Length: 198
Image 1 (spheres, rainbow, N blue to C red):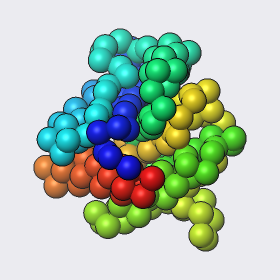
Image 2 (spheres, rainbow, N blue to C red):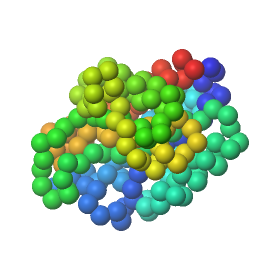
Image 3 (cartoon, rainbow, N blue to C red):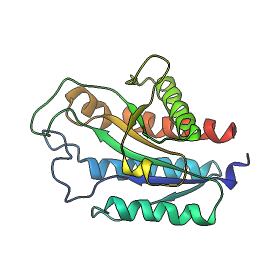
């Protein structure tokens, strides 16, 4: 399919006032990091001739219902839309460092085949860019969960958990130039591979 015919929606979850979404040392704030990541992905996609839009421009926390409404408003007027919701994972409550590490992709319990295919493309790209992908099961790299951004939107939708904000090594990597580049590039590659095969 012509890449310009697909609208790519980027959702950066959480807002500045959302409690607990940070590294224990405060160096990484999830709301800020995911907005920076969304901006880097957007810039790369636009430079490549893709049609991309941000769902959340505000620093404030936009409720899930409103974020889903914004996605579905686009879906009502365009036949080819996909959604990536960007997050950082956490194993604890943000007060101490934990051991869990890695990158993951999540789909809803009612995920379409296209959602699963998009998730697989992203997982394959993550591995290509050197990420340890947390797999649900052998042969199934994506995780099924009851996630509103994937469940209540009317397009292929994947939520990515971009490493753990409460793992010290993951945070060091996330904040490095290498990590920032790899995470943006893997999303662009996964999206491009998915659209190419439509």
